[in-house]
Each structure stands twice: as structure tokens, then as C-alpha cells.
Image 1 (cartoon, rainbow, N blue to C red):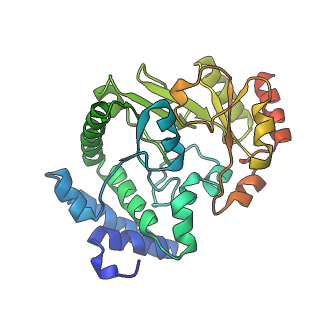
Image 2: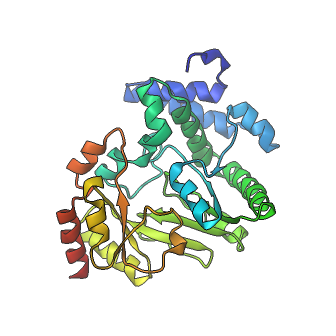
Length: 297
């Protein structure tokens, strides 16, 4: 980010937060951001985006994973926030340490930017996260507007349409799901209290194998939900071949899955992939077998 003068006021705060190493100073920046959003007046989406310095909130087919849905003639609107506590507010409250370390928020274009010493994506995601946390009323209104536009655009072009609002978060957006009964929504979640709706498909995500989480996995299965496991890339094919296991890498459209209790996700390259493996979040084939046996036991 070379031209800091071109940044909006809130993006300057987001960049400062991102680069600040001292917890006390980061907290001070959060207080300023909260006051900023409390005073924010919302009139139109265009004016809001101009003030925040962003060009969109959610976007259609904005990552390689959701783009795979094109083979099924789907266009997918997805919202990417900062994940975990990266923006100072925990938007993934049930995430384990390994999940936070190996999170996909640090993969793809974001990872390439970091390696190049840039922060465009990270800063924008912090701003969007702050908007969602501090002014959910505005975020909901903007998302509804974007869903209406994207859905109509997909229909005009002869495409099917789906929405994933928790691309890198685990938040409650039930107000939106209920406002669009004709739209197919889906998410992965680690929240055992989150329940599916007729138009909202949920896949339960692995985080760790302690006693409490094993109970949650069994509860999810009783609701008819598959459980998603991230597995090391070199053992992905073997994992997919296990009984009741199937690949979740063909597309991201989980509501199209027809069979299998355990979905296998190939671990993607992230900034802290090794730490995710060390913390037993990214599983080996042997670890996966052991956890499935515990769930089945």
C-alpha cells in the first residue's frame, strides 16, 4: 500500500491496526473504529462504499474454490471477512488454535500479497469485518441489496445461484436467510447451536477431537449434517477412499452432496500451514481414521 494518502479514514485505521504490534495500541485503534461506525450515516450503498474505500462487500465467484461451482452452472456470492480475531473481534468463536493458525483467510491472493509486502485484501477485510460487527444493521442491508442484484443477474444469464455468507467467518445471518426463501444459502460451521433451514444448508466443521467436540460431531450427524475434515494434501486421495468419506474439493456447493458422512478437504497452502499440522487441525490419514473411530464409537 504505497499511497497511504489515498486511503479512506477507516482504511487508515485498519492498516494501522494490522501493522501495530502493541496490544494496548491495537485496542486504542479498535475504540476509534467503533466510534467511527457508531457515527456512520447510511444512505446508499454507493456512498457507503465510497466513504469506506471499498468496491464491494460480497462478490460472485471471487475465489478459486467457489468458482468450481461453474461446472454445475452455479454462480456463488460469497462474503470474505478477516476470520478469527484478525480484526480485533472474534467472528469464529468455536475455532480451535490450529484452525485459527491454518485458516484459509491466509491463502490464495491474500498470501501472495503478504509475500509481496502488500495489505490491500487484509485491510479491506478488516473494514468489512468492523462494519459487520459494529453496524450489523448496515451490513445486513448491504448484503440484501447485493443478493438481490446478483440473483437477478444470474437468472438473466441462465445460471443457478447460491450464497455463502461465512466464507471466512462463523456468524449468524438468519435474518438474511429468512428474507430470501427462494435463494440457496450454505455454510460450514463449528457452532453446535447453528441449525439448517429449508434454504440454508450446513456442513459441520472439524476443529479438534476433545470430548465436547466429539459430542457436537454426533449431534451434527443426528441432524443429517456431514462433517468436514481438512487433510494433508499428500494423503487426500487415500482419505477420500475411506468408508463413508468423500471429496469436498470437486466444488464448494455442499448442498449438492448426495452421500457420505465425512467430507474430505485438501489442505491448502497458507502462511501457517505447518502450525495447523502441528496443532492436529490439518490431519494425517492415521489421525483421521482415529477420530472417525471415536465418532463412530
